[in-house]
Length: 361
Ligand code: SF4
Ligand code: SF4
Image 1 (cartoon, rainbow, N blue to C red):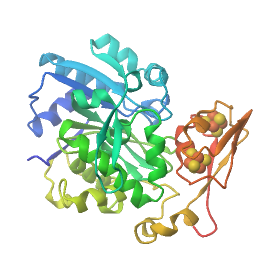
Image 2: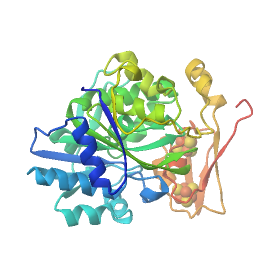
Image 3: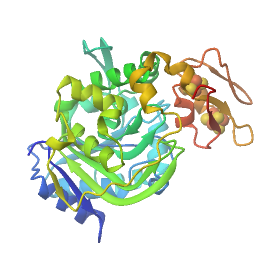
Image 4: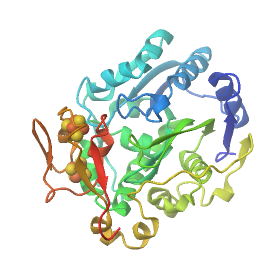
């Protein structure tokens, strides 16, 4: 049952659904201290399909508190500098939930990360946020499409979210093609996997289209729970209408044998499994990505600033891994430096970065 995934439709309240799912997979915590790791990418709310629903986090805190556990909640959002995570947790209502429930908020950027030797397929070493290495983790991703990785769920939430500050930019520079990005994500996941005790996926309001921040919200009203992040992602992505192995980082994880090899190996418990076909990101041509990743940079969409929407906040410039954006009142992109990683599209809270289809696409 280590790969079992429970799917529960929310009928009365979120806590009841989580308790039911945890019971179905028979999860009992053996540890006394937990870090809850939601997906807090920017200050857009959970009902916009962007960040984890605070009701899920408050329910987990209550459940763990009843078991006498010490609870921390933290994340490293996009463009993370000291103080940004607190602002995002505050704006989304998450900080209020944490402080009112007796858990402790931790900002991953508040203490120096620990450099870990990975010796992975693409990463030799990586600096991981210290709280991730000190506690057992309850990983709380949100089900969304993603312009760069096609989908995002449990594995990506814990891997990219564990790398504080400028480390994320390094991953984007290394992961220049979808295949290389998949290798980097799974290199990090392989290190963190033993720390994960439970994965609880927010599939209440998900995102389709050009996610993870500027796509279209889609309400499923479900909670998915599993001990295994790969099993959870495979079932969730199948539910979103995709063959899981078409998602490059899922394919990479399957190839490395670090979890179930097929969704047919995963027991599904709880409410009936229903497929809801998500609109995929316009940036992603599955066949091209799997067969022609060498040519991906010329097939991929380019990015363009929408000057009517740009507020000149500078988030995109400080997040761009290539230093391709300068601020001249508003953002200006140097196309010759751009690697089309779409980080600017992801971090812009004003929807001011447009994706432009290439001629070949
Ligand atoms: S494009 Fe978006 S993130 Fe960049 S400066 Fe303009 S508003 Fe800010
Ligand atoms: S301009 Fe945007 S898409 Fe291009 S490298 Fe910078 S963050 Fe990535």
